Length: 106
Image (cartoon, rainbow, N blue to C red):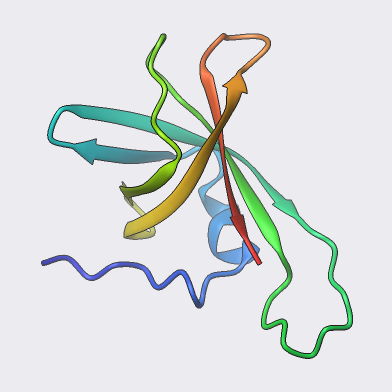
């Protein structure tokens, strides 16, 4: 079994070099490449329990008329390896019509 990237330890800096790279989602009945389009840094507060700056990832699907469900998806990136990320479909991109997805990390 492939070791999964520990999402408990990732930061926005982990994903920033992977902008414009593919993250391949593989299920028995569908394979979809999601392109990481943006890493958005959230607002930090004074909560001493917070271990990292909140951030979100925006992905763009590559297959017309395909929407992945809101759930944890197994995905793989050539640089970062295998991981499981909870993504939410936000709606179609206004230019391409392809689905936009978001993953949030607090």
